[in-house]
Amino acid sequence: MHVVLVLLSGLSMCWGARILALLPENCRSHYIVMEPLLMELHDRGHNLTVVTSFPQKEPLENFTEVDFSSQLPPPTNQFNLEIIRRKLSNMYVTASFEIEFNLAMCHEVLGNDRVLRLLEEKFDLVIVEIFAADCFNYYPYKMKVPFINFISSTVYPWATERTGLPDNPSYIPNYFVSYSPDMTFFQRTFNTISLYFMKIFYYFESEISAWKLAENVFDEKLPPMDEINRQTSLILVNSHFTLSQSRPFTPNVIEVGGIHIKDVQPLPKDINEFLDGANEGVILMSFGSLVLFSSLPPQMIRMFLDVFATLPQRVIIKYEDELTDTPPNVMYKKWLPQSDIIAHPNVRLLITHCGIASVTEAVYYSKPMVAIPLFADQYKNAWDVINRQVGILLDFNNLSQRDFSQAVKAVLENPRYLENMRRLSKQFRDRPMTPLQTAVYWT
Image (tube, rainbow, N blue to C red; front, side, top):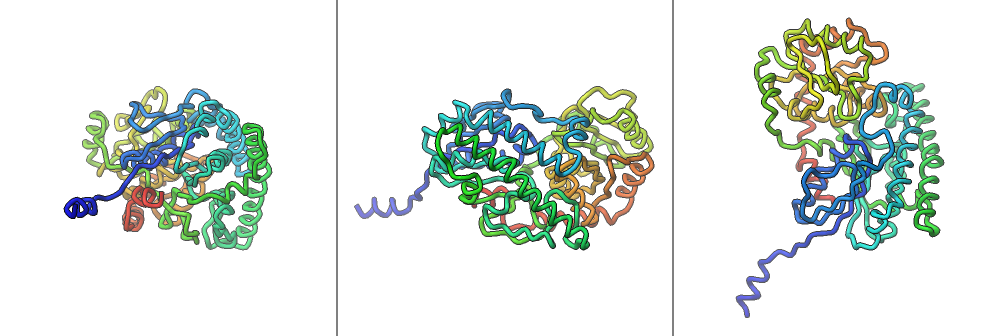
């Protein structure tokens, strides 16, 4: 008996939780940030049910998916230039479009029979993305379980009240402006007005609409959306103070910027040979998974190619259509393993729209940038690049061949951009745990 007790005392008690992830947002750049957490939780023995628009290619044991990839309204996962100019031209139009799109998603998913049946199951935790509608926070409320909100970018203006997160506009630029913390009086004034306008706009356009929709779907009186949001147990934010900005966080708001960066994988043979053979280095030009590069004006695409033809470096471009008359030093692909390419030692420059994932990858692998932001938080991300002197900013709407050529050559030839980026990369990586380990620990 004593021997049995001794052996039992050496056993560790562990069990897997049942976790529900409500992540139907039909935007791949959002999902790739959150997916590593789901897979790591699964690998650690937890049972996951995921509502998603990006199902796994192969089914996994204890990983159940509710697939909405064919049911959500447009835009699906790509914007062309017309959509960007028509619906994402400024912060107010952008916020309105994002709220409209997310509320349409709420209408499609919240009352769907496949999702409603989840209320009959028992879960220990729910993970919900914060973007432009919080309707899915009603599910953990009805299940009476704790829930985590995940922000796939820096903090949104409407995400601070739920945890009491300070967002003093006198020194914290909001998500929609590209200011430094050292703002002028005019900038602080505009930052304050735009911040509180966005909070009020979101409350009336998104929170009240989501509340009424939830009451209609569940056919019962429910607490207002803002009251539900204040029950959030934890917020994971895809940012890091070395890159975005040092600001006060409450104990239940955790930065996990870089969580999506995985171990480097082997590149396809043709791409690897193209990179390996570049004695003068390689330039990567990509506008991410959301923007259709091929929708840019033909004269602008031609201008890019003409500049690349004058360079000794090789250039690889993410381009979704057929590209004619390409210079011999240019390769284009409809899809690129971007992070693995950026990690290649011969890559010297990233020309980017400044999506948060692209900027984070460039910082992680010490690659200077030429920033050409198009919409939303990309302007703020681009400012972060410029403020740390690790790249050059160009205005997409006033882009000339001369300016583009000078910017590319300046970043390639001036060593200070690479030196600053190496310093920033070292600071970004210097953490007691990896971003993924941090997210798992707090989950």
